[in-house]
Image (cartoon, rainbow, N blue to C red; front, side, top):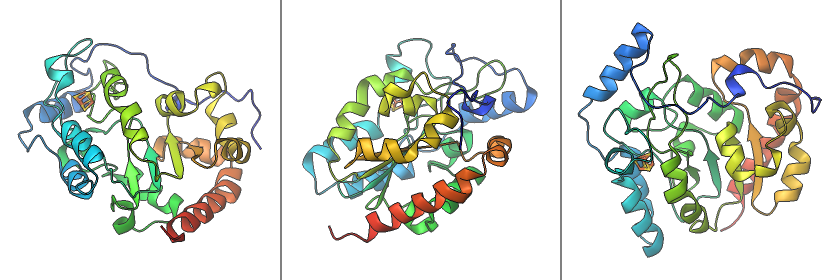
Length: 263
Ligand code: SF4
């Protein structure tokens, strides 16, 4: 089991906030140019499906509709504006019982208008024991990142942190409007800071390792922490074999039981 003093690895460590700007690596510069030049519809596929799923709940429908066309980070940003057109990506419905509470979409998700549209999504679905159809079914699974829009790249070529405007504007209202949620899966430091603020002094390894205590304490809306399913965390997974041997079977059993329970 992990020790509370374990040092978070690079992929677990929150990046410092800095103004969006051109990334320094050629690959990231090209990716940022593609994001800036992208001319797809401002309302993403994920937001459109969420609006349809929320249609029967007037309060959530109104909220989802406003989130789908949000342009705060372009028109009234708290700092530098987004370096591309906002494309909010989230998956919400009045009936979802499980929420993936992640950081912010990456560039590939930004282009596709669909969350976890990359190998991380494949691994996350395997961790959760879910098919792609169930994972992308807003009636069953919500995906509520701390920032709904791709934030752009920092000068080192990494993704910037989730936009603070999003949390300040939407999150309290969204989670209050979804009383059906039974399990929140937190991925990343910004999500943990929002959903489990009392763990801010602990390493990610310690927080993930304490899943039984945290789940018991936070029930009936159970919160569990996960490392990011990115390949960047392969070394962390190798160093912490208890995660795949003990944590994931427990997680899959919880998810199966929640989805199978009668409404
Ligand atoms: S990141 Fe959030 S607050 Fe900013 S434009 Fe996108 S949806 Fe709006």
